[in-house]
Length: 483
Image (cartoon, rainbow, N blue to C red; front, side):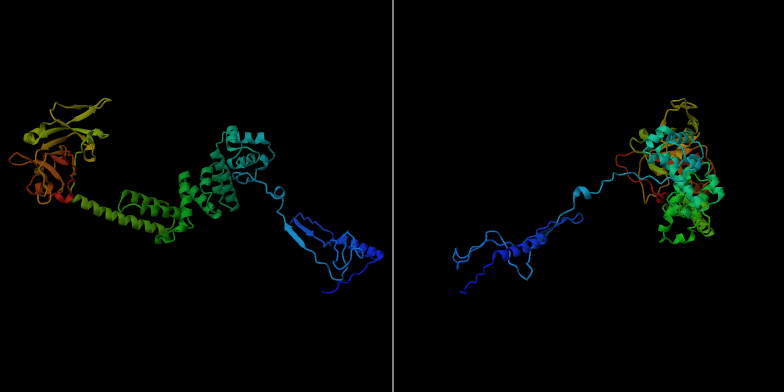
């Protein structure tokens, strides 16, 4: 074991060193640094010595002073540093909550004559419409800024909330037309009215608004027309995949609207009245020659196809064969009352049946020119709803009196044949007529067969064939079932 060397320090020398230590400790004392930005807390701990005794010395020989002291050394004393980043003060750094505010359009420049008015005067201007509409419309946003709401403005001025929004937006659209140097005639047209038209084209660009406004003025469009025009202009660029789009000029508003109607015509079957109507509208609003030529070709093709369909119809069956449904008469909104004669009465019964039958009074009381024992009530079907004087119904106990093909459809059942006695001349080859054969029996014959036999007049033209109601309803007579 190494011997321990004890150095005795004189009191004067010890005091000098202690003073140096105290001077040094003024710098190295524990610090607490507080920063407002990052809240950094730094703590510096100094090394302290506790009193000790050496086991190799006697207590009477040497005893350390109980007060702590440090040995001087040329080497720096290492000190521990602890840093703690504190969160910022939540009360100081918390952002202020902003309540939701509805969108308020920026106010338009207020005319000089309205610029210095107080709140009451502005309300009076709006209430009495003192000026042009685009002049007093900018007063509405200024009232919003002062705390007014659309209901409160409506209560004071009589202008509804919808009308307030329309006036403000339309005034801004008109200002954009002025900035784009629109035609003076267009601006004059919207000087005294037309806010509802300008409101509909609000979603278009400045150049599109100028062209659309010109089109609205030249074609005297209403609000619905302006809405369709704006929708057509916005929708046109999205239809790039359609080949017919190349025939329409995007710069021309009329072509955009025409293209929209042209597309609508494709949604209907060909030919049809809806398709033809849409194509006619497209041709009416088209501006470029290419668009007009395309639509005219479509109309011509539809017309030729329609004529072909009509020829096929004329060569086919004209007489519908329907089965009366149970309860159909009671549910019908309109009915037809006709006299009935049986096949046994033959031609005499048809000629003696009342020729005129009408409804009288507010209750629609049926009145006939003479008394008759048998009547039938049928729903107001289209072939007979307009039937005037001369209508008659002949009841047959066997449906074989009709020219049906026995090899495809054959059924023995009672039927009613509705005929028009005012049309007795045999005119149409493919028409059907009620005739009396040489043996006196009644039958339905085709016009061509009657002409071949030299028959020029019949008992009446057949309009409808009615089959009796059944619990199980089967299919009606098909076109190819007629001979």
